[in-house]
Image (cartoon, rainbow, N blue to C red):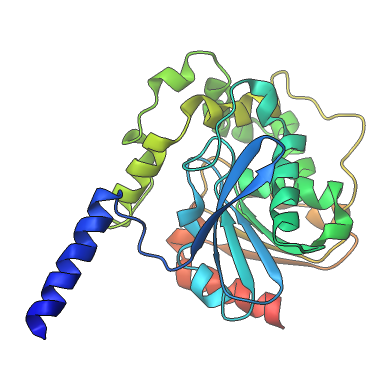
Length: 297
């Protein structure tokens, strides 16, 4: 019996190795069609839909610590944004403009034959989440945003705060034509602290498009000279939970001020003094508990 178990286990591991050693998180993989672009997702659980959107440089696996707990109450769907990992990687800056990113999320919700969903986003995923709630308020149940201030707050800080302007130097570099050629999959994992996760990230980034990643900045990030636009974004109509690691050196916390002015419903703001930009991994257990408690209250 033991010998058969060892043989079976060895065979299974060999198959996994040959297939690229899938990430050790249970779930069902699939694809949703967003026009001509296929969006890869991993889903777990049953119940109301929760769509989770990663940022830069990242992929669906960033939510591995949150997904099992959420799946006890919801159907959780973590996506690879276009340009990343197993999702399609269309060429051209115009294919990464915010309306297309927002419609990718809409396509995922419709793929699961739902009318609405809780939208969770980090970094660029947070920008997409904010924008989705503005564009499709009727499809947005609630909003959970991690380390991405409201877009009005970020634009205000870029226009008025020299420290935020300095902190955004990386974004200006990413808007240059040569930036993608300087990236490597290994270097993009600089922030990954979990040694077991790092190989998965290297493999995912090797499958990704560096040009696609940086097209998010070229298509959507404000450019110099930074100025406040005449018109602010429409107000968010649903309840919002924001979680922000205060050691984020790219998105400074000053942009969080006045967020409540741009919302029509309640705001819950949670700040973590010792967490950085990737708060969902820096403080995984705390973040998971906060999201689950807020969504199930």
